[in-house]
Length: 268
Ligand code: SF4
Ligand code: SF4
Ligand code: SF4
Image (cartoon, rainbow, N blue to C red; front, top):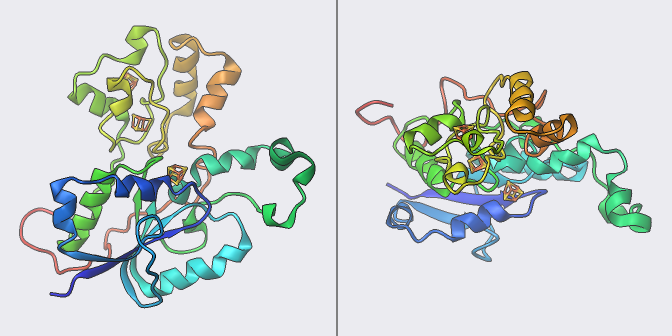
């Protein structure tokens, strides 16, 4: 069987999610390379392709009209499109600018009107093209990406977590940050990372966004009453990685999901 062609593409982002994949010497990843051909990956190889591809991992947000045609062209060529990282899934931290009118003047001062700085609201790529799956996180969890691609190669639909990080904290018996007099967004943050931050004594900042239908009122209440944050700080905290999540077009996960191979035996 021919190897699946996999390509990485980047839009408005820091490319940290691509870099995360280059920092991967795990045996399971090296095994995956026996089953895929990486045909475009700006952070790792200089080759580019205009050929059809099996899986497009698209990193970054849609922030300017000039990128629409390139996104559509990737969609035409790819059997499966994965929103790769939080910038692509929900617009991530890029969407903070959507809440501040004078962000360009704040950052660039008198140079704010230079043409190359022209950009619109940050949106997830699903605002422009159909997205089949999402790999959340800022940056992505490389083991989760490995699992998503591996599931697709086996004809299975990848599992997208929709439970809070607290569940993963409990699984690894981490003492809750609130018990340490700290605050934490893990009560409504989308799990799938394995809760490394609370395990290291750091509050979860919800870098994977929130679960579907998060109870933000309860979150802000607990941030204030148990976490000791001010009203303003609680509001800011809930925006950091989720500024565009409310009302954003995040990827749906269709029941009949595209896959690269016929389903194999066992549970899917
Ligand atoms: S999701 Fe985070 S790490 Fe990935 S490209 Fe965006 S800002 Fe960078
Ligand atoms: S530390 Fe955060 S994620 Fe972990 S159990 Fe407490 S609130 Fe939940
Ligand atoms: S614990 Fe929270 S901040 Fe840390 S990686 Fe997971 S979702 Fe991101």
